[in-house]
Image 1 (cartoon, one colour):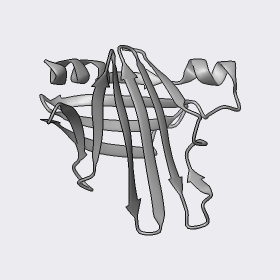
Image 2: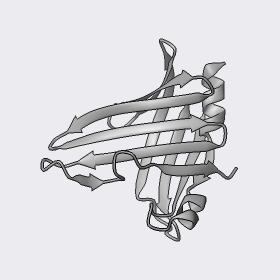
Image 3: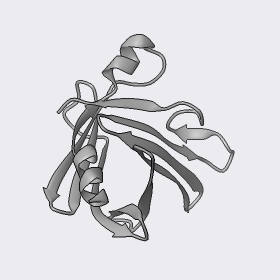
Length: 142
């Protein structure tokens, strides 16, 4: 039941158009597409507005473990672990790859996906993503 609800909310097309119209300097205009390619697998692509080639592609296996939803990235074996709190699925993970530290904070509700996905270099500066307290606010379009 929990898995079905998560998959229903996660599947579809999202964009942050409203966010960029309200504050053009807050973030780039991005489209996120979470295609459900099998019962428990998603192919996710992220595009900058008006580009045809995604800047990020990921294949996730969806698993249920100890009351949590795990999106396991097939290529890297890392998991994004979502826990349900009220009517929201929340994910807060961090991991290190070589010389970089990655943080992923996300909130998924019915029709809304807020994400802060950032990377820090050895110098402690953000090399990719938004500042710690800023989020991409994606609204579901279908």
